[in-house]
Each structure stands twice: as structure tokens, then as C-alpha cells.
Image 1 (cartoon, rainbow, N blue to C red):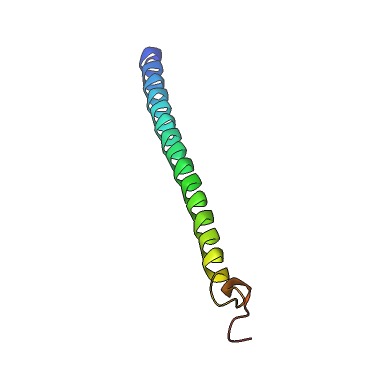
Image 2 (image 1 turned 45 degrees about the vertical axis):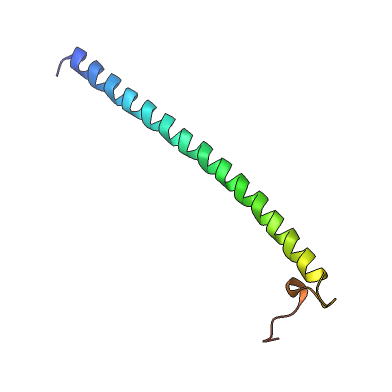
Length: 70
């Protein structure tokens, strides 16, 4: 294999790896956005549940109660 062939092969590999890294970076950025949305929605759901429980019959919130097996 000549030096030119080796250089061409290495350039192809670098090009492929660069494209793969760029694609993975895009995937990670989308996942980060999705996780942020999920965290916000979970927070809203938790606040809504606390509000719902406190508006109930004035009992202890389920999250603060001991499980029945205790």
C-alpha cells in the first residue's frame, strides 16, 4: 500500500468519524432538551399533586405517609 493510499484511507476514516461525532452531538443535544422538558413537567405534576392533596380532606399528603407495611 502506497503512502498516498494510506493517507487517503486515513482521511476517509477521519471524515467518517467526524460525521459520526457530529451526529452523536445532535442526538445528545436533543436528549438534553427532552430531559429538561421532562424535569419541568415532573415538577409541575408534583406541585399539582401536592396542591390536590392539600385541597382534599386535610389529611397527610400521601408522599408523607408511611407505607401500609410499616
